[in-house]
Length: 399
Image 1 (cartoon, rainbow, N blue to C red):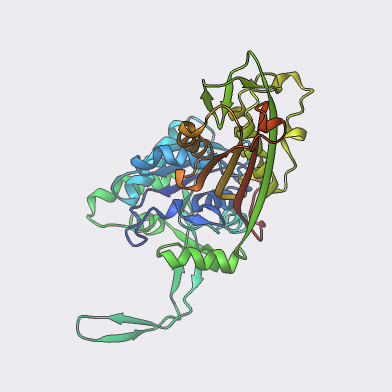
Image 2 (image 1 turned 180 degrees about the vertical axis):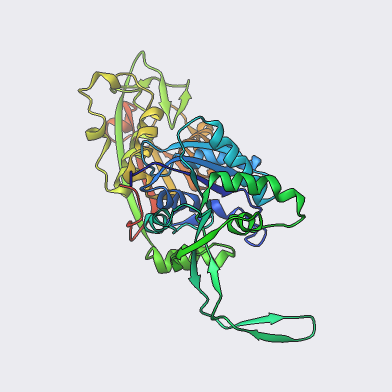
């Protein structure tokens, strides 16, 4: 079977009412949970992906995608969802079919809140495709005893013939379109595609599921899956240092913010000493070398380049995208110019570049007590410490 020829719709448009906040953005292995969902489910087979999210999450989802380590050839579209799961799936399917791409006869429909459904599970679904089958679903045995709870009493339920249904579910596109079109006529609400297609007369078959592909519903679910199946996370620390002499005739840029009160710094790029130290600290967390090796001064393409562009390239490195930045602490050592008024703008700018909250970024400014060439006002030095989370195990991450 050809690799990477499958279409998928991943639904992230739920209200997360029992989670008390948007669960697809909750921390999982140091990054938003949706990153692990996309990386694990789209690792091998998926070529065309439609990601369905709440309208108010569209901007945030686009930013989060930049932190995901996804195959280069994965074609991604983001659309807004509807009031119900079926409406969200219908919108995703419509966007998929409207792309005009060769998506084949089948589509995977998956819950964004199941982060550990991997390529092996997808492979089992694909292997079960055959004529006469309209939907293939993964199931796992029910391990716990069950009871039916009534208003005044309860009674045991025989679990021997019961199974828990998971996603992704592999649907024949024609059958799913037909089922979605008839849903409004029967007055029923469906919680998954299999029950919807079956109600419309479709044929369902099952394959072995995976207990790891559990759905995150309550806050403790994410922590449990993270600790048991990802091996929890490690806290890592990176350190960066940069120093530049003043250079007359150049503009001063620190932390991505223009500083009109002083001369610029000497360097190949815009000589933003803050962002340079920050980049080295981030690369240190990821074990990914330093900016001298990544952006050699001998390469003319970096002459005068905005350091924010270099930072975006650092953040795009697959090794860096596996970590989740917890905090950034910067110390600027300069006798001149006075930088107190620029600390808040630098915090906001760095937080924006890193796609983290401003509270995670701290900027300190100090002098050198007239000691040495920095103390004599000849240049600026910057120190930076970055704390990040990195999964102990990276077996599900795309390489």
